[in-house]
Image (tube, rainbow, N blue to C red):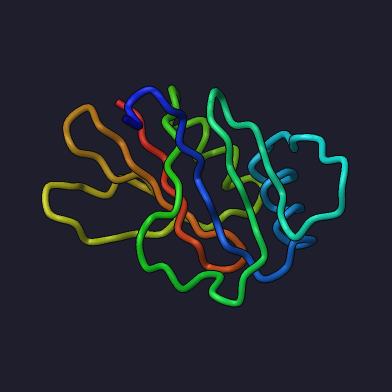
Length: 125
């Protein structure tokens, strides 16, 4: 039923102005034009969309809210770090931490948080 339907990453934030600066300025996402004032922002990300909305529950999820699959993890991490992003380090079985990147064979993972504490993941390999 849903196998041929696109999914959208949905991320709660406290302040849309702060979120806009992070998702557009830091992550480089492109906003989808809106014809009306809303309590949400929508971004195109590859063939997917990211929906950022205002909520009192922003940042309460303790797991990844969205994951981006990237071709060059080292370059993406280096670029984001240059924009002031701090990466999270987790002690997970089967993963070795190399700098800010967790490695398991050919797979590479990195985690960061948005200004509200939402966990965002990067994956390659």
